[in-house]
Length: 93
Image (cartoon, rainbow, N blue to C red; front, side, top):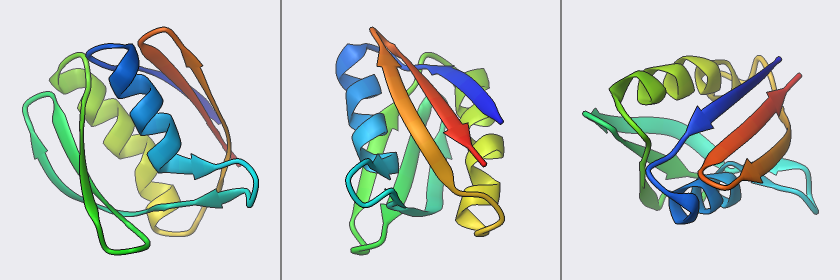
């Protein structure tokens, strides 16, 4: 399964891609979504740190949260992330 999520800008897209998936170890770092505030999503990583990412709007946050929930629940794994300017394409399997 694959989605494209629009972030506020290119920096936020790159940040989200780096927080989600580490390519070398093929590991997903996000362990839970801590909070959602309008177009902002706050995620917790495996090291228990919290990070905020600004998406384009609230609908993009909802799209991302729905998509990533099965990964957090360990039903799926992230396979790949690609950044296209301020959009990030996330593939899970």
